[in-house]
Amino acid sequence: MDNILLILCSCLNSFVITTILFQFMDSRYKKVFKKNIYVWIETVIVLCIIVVNSLNNFLLNLIVWFGIVGITVYFLYYEDKDKPLRRVLECEALMFCMTVCESLGVIFLRWILQAVNVSNINVIMLHCLESTFPTIIIIFFYYMIISRLMKKSSMPYSKMQYMIYFILLGYSFINMLVIIEIFAQGQINYLCAINMGCIVLADLYLLYFVKMADEKNYYENQVKVLEQQANIQYEYYLAQAKKYDKTVQILHDVKKHIKAIEDLYTSDQESMAGEYANKIGDLLKPLIPVRYTENPILNILLTDKETIMKDKGISMEIKIDNVSLDFVEPIDVTTIFGNLLDNAIEAAEKAEGEKYVYIKIGSRRQMIIISIENSCDDVKWKNDIPISKKGKGRGIGLLNVRSSIDKYDGSLKLKQENKKFVAELFLNA
Image (cartoon, rainbow, N blue to C red; front, side):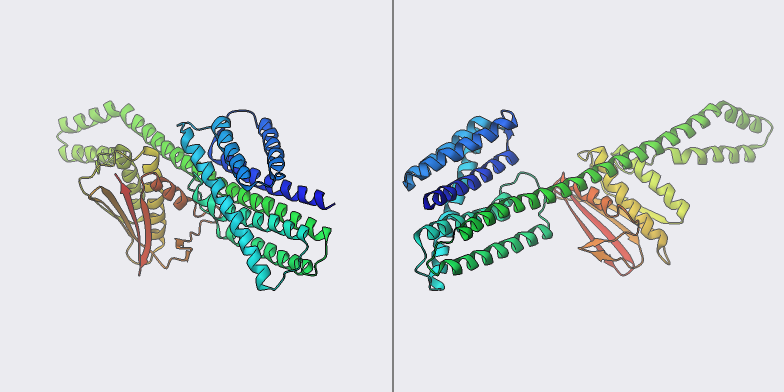
């Protein structure tokens, strides 16, 4: 039974390390072969390491581990911009970190045993402790630190995710202390040894599922962001289609209008002809975008928003220096300015007293600075973000804005001063 227990400890340790390594490689690189092949490869690696562990040669164990890791990542994975040496170094660095964690885990365990004055633990039970305790440290160190430092995406870790990690870590640590107390009697307790293995497996899969659940939530929010961007773009094109229809209607009757003006002039009714021409000009004015900048999309958007503000009784002032926004993609122009101006118009419309929106675009060195200021009532904040009263889906607009700004290594600052709200953007040109 003792030999079986030792083999199980070796299996557990090899399985956890192999699983973490493959999780890391799966998250960073692309697979060369089909998924089923990797399951068999993982199994073969675990069995190979178990055989090597049975020889009780620490140096040989390290050489085999580092050799297997290098060969696996070199031949079984690839990247679009293929850099095999970097892949190998990254995985070897992870393997080195886990080796250090394992060694520190054994040292920490022995310090605990010394601190609680436990010295008569059975040799087999001590071996089980020295296999499982460092493995738990490896699991938490990987999910809480290494996976965060070496991940490719910019996905943030939520506070809830860290809270769950710390709760599980505390629970596992307390369980291990209880088991050490039981082993302190010098007895062999196979159930406690099996329980340690269960704790390790539970930690491995619970932390993995928490991580996956958090990623799922993040990507669902990203999908909402993209959907909202698509809706903004769709609404923009609908507005342009209506403008086009209105332009066609006016142009369709342009000959009639010209003849009417000519008839008025020939009948010596110049003042009436002038009024008629002014009315035609007023009809055409909203359809012709004002040239605020060199960016035609922004010109159209600002012209549209100015028309909306006039209808709502909101004064609009625009001050734009000689800056180029050509580097900003059209969808990002509509996302950034569309969302922020919609928010500014909504707040200014509800504000008591003066209703205004002031837009300023300038540059400083290689930074484009955009400031959108508007009148407002009191604003409620949550996590440094103003809370909208739009109901379901609120906050998605600002998520879209931040997502677009991130493409240009920019930043967004939101602040309220008395009855004034300011959104300040910084974009790297």
